[in-house]
Image (tube, rainbow, N blue to C red; front, side, top):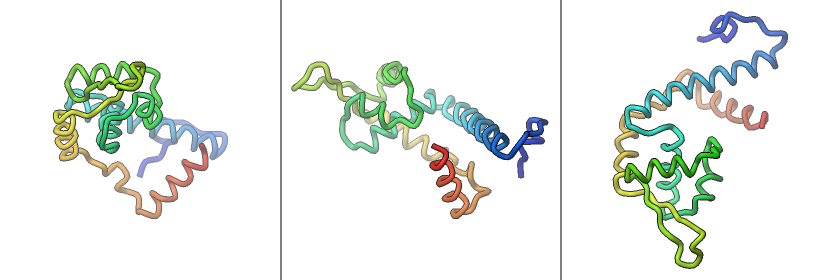
Length: 145
């Protein structure tokens, strides 16, 4: 089992500081693993998140709705969608009632990519936790926010 004190060779003035550093360190560790994993599919974790949102919606949705549902609120969500559109993984649809509104839909190629990712995606980053521990961790993280 890891120990943040040994991993970064540091002592902490109290457990709250240690916990905060551990959260940041662990988040960066997970981000690094995700970046490496998704790179082989030619997308970023944020783009994967957009594709999953669109698949889950089951119908075209507004850009603003996508931004609201993103795990990592990104000011460059439009740029991320531009890249997905260029790769033909999503499509833009003009709203007939309001030309200022654009709806986004996932394409068949986007769905195929998600299927291919699902085959390789390892969700075992939390394999050392029991279901009860994972639930408690989630509750504690919610409590922090």
